[in-house]
Amino acid sequence: MSKITIYINGKPYKVEPGQTIMQAADKLGFHIPRLCYHPKLSIEGACRVCIVEVEGMKNYVASCAFPVSDGMKIRTNTLELRQARRDIVELLLDNHPQDCHVCERNGTCELQRLSYSMGIRNRHFEGQRKDYPADESSEAVIRDPNRCILCGRCVRLCSEIQQIHNLSQAYRGFKTVVMPAYNIPMKDSVCSCCGQCVNVCPTAAFLEKNHTKEVFAALNDPSLVKVVQFAPSVRAAIGEAFGLEPGHNMEGQLVAALRRLGFDYVFDTQSGADLTITEEASEFLERLQGKGKLPMITSCSSAWMKCMEQFHPDLIDNISTCKSPMSMTGAMVKTYFARRLKVSPEKICSVAVMCCTAKKYEAARPELMVDGLRAVDYVVTTREAAWMIKSAGIDFLNIIPEPFDEPLGISSGAGVIFGTTGGVMEAALRSAYELFTGQTLVDIEVQAVRGFEAIKEGKVVMDGQEIRVAVTHGLGNASKLLDMVREDPKRYHFIEIMGCPGGCIGGGGQPYAGVNAIPLDEDALKKRAQVLYDLDRHRTIRRSHENPAVQRLYKEFLQRPLSPISHKYLHTHYKAKEPRGVIPRS
Image (cartoon, rainbow, N blue to C red):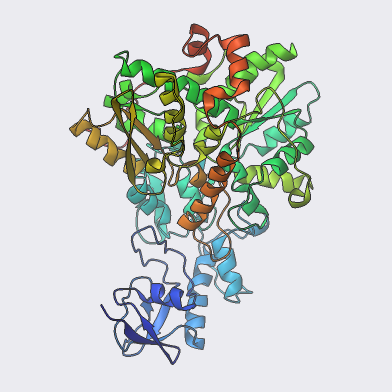
């Protein structure tokens, strides 16, 4: 279809038909202010911040929802428009807490940025304010209705992308509030703890539960041995919290910064990922021989595991019994490493820096305790770790990179790619193929399971047997894939599911998007993923079972994959959970 002509602020431009005014303006370099809009979500048109003038229209129109037409004359920056937008934002501010200087989102708040860019320097309206208690019941996510501006992003993401449907707007008018069904506590709701509501919230109505105070206290306790691990995707994203563009590997800088914070040992969750793959590949091969149910489904994503227990209990027997890399690493810290140090596990404070808010929930699960102790005492997100580094006065961008500590600091390329969608599957296939056939997989980079498509399918032939696999990311896509499994249980042998869009690189604990950037922007996710693929490509060892640290673990402690001691510390089981406030899945 040929382009049409529109006029913006008196000048003609050729644009593609079928776009909204906002979409066309963005491509032409005109940034129209917005709050409720997100390109991955349905159009809400609720905030009205994006209003523009269209010649011939009696009232302002919401540019996020109004389509362009040939000959349309649009004004985006008149004095009247600027005043109207200011009035809208000032009314939002009237009903917003006046405590920016102590707010978690100070400096990264979209409402704050918008207020500054619009020239709002005074509060002109005074009126009744919302007064709701914050819901801090969840291990992972805090809900604070007083900071909510009713943009609806969290509701739409939870329903449309994740398809959990935990949040909705209740009541009407001034009393409207976002809450779980029946206003039950977040802890008891169907919330998967994925934290994507935190990622897309423009203010601080949703936040991760903060554990930095407890970690700082532990770091200042001389009686404790302080151990920390961090996930693959953290190194690929934490630089963004210090002003860098997406796509920088900050692995060595983060190791050095964590030591300066006071940690005695800095380990790599990627080493735990190699351990996970060694166990998971062995488990998969056993199931191929009839010792378990197929298709086997990965269990590394904490948000996905909670979702599965609540909404897909009929497939629990398909779930791998392997713990996640974080929990496996934590278990080895409290057992194998404690014995090497000749220190009581109670005297070890085990901390994990994760891209994911759901890891806070995972760390608190009683099923994952090790000899009566938590394997991981505290989980801090990428955002929290960045704040701790800044708070301690550490010059993160100019610090000299340092290596990990042994024995849990060595990892293969397979352990690296765990952080992006398809990475777990690719890593597992590398090891499973070699363990099954005794030969090396020639095409070690399994392109079929890479990328950001909703559902990716691939196959590998092992000794004449075709192994069919599938990969998906995001809980909404997971439900679609599992429906396909129910329709045809023999369609796949192995399935990877990651709870967050893009996998761990898009986790709910990753840095907030920068000025004019879009939360969960696919370009940023691709750049983070590329960091991990580049790290993998430059590794000498690219298969998990060849990791010498993992081999030493088996030799000195675990004996062999799937051994009794391995099952005790590296495996678990899940049970169905009846979700409250929803109709059970038929």
